[in-house]
Length: 250
Image (cartoon, rainbow, N blue to C red; front, side, top):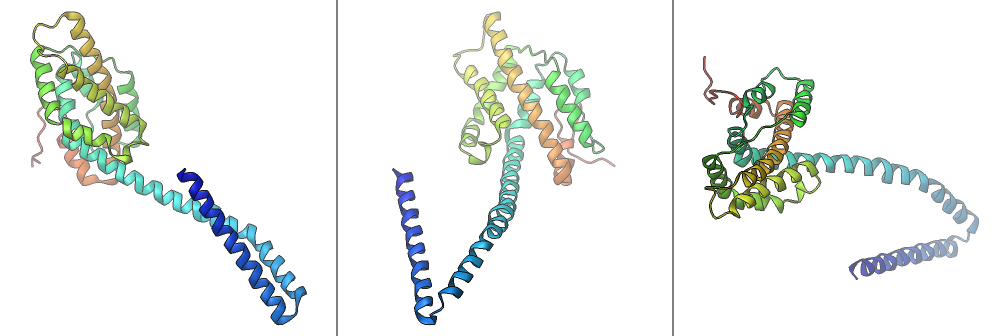
């Protein structure tokens, strides 16, 4: 109904403008008694319409669209940066503790200031293909459940953020991570779970962990290119650096 009403409103406006134009041209003919000149200028104006379409519709619209995309990208990256500061980096550290081949993963993700675009792209490819071997103990599952539980309101608010709707991979990661929390909270106790259930939970964590790592590499790449000072701190907080510290030593 709203679409129909908008169409009718636009149609009325269009008719008013056409009638106004016809009245003005008629007045011009009546006042100056020169139909030939009026017709000449009318066709001259019509001949310029295609050029106006090119200037306004194509060029201006392209510039406005590019600016809008840039603004959306900035807002999106701001939200993603906040996510990793609030939830993502600590969650990576918790999940990494359950990875049996953590040393090999650490070698792939030791991001440093000298990394180039090619290094980040290589790291993304390695993460996508890396054979994660997650095997969680009860205490590790408890710590992950407790931590994600404290961040649940924040995670739910992120689903309401319209800037993330167009970022499919980040949204998929959010759902995978929230699913892990939902699975953990759905069990009254994590003690004495059968092997089959632990395998199921491990598979859920593998899915979320891989998607989280892919987004983390992309996030680090963004910081390297646009915010070097934030990138410096992110490197010092890298969950894959053994003995990491935010303190800058001499």
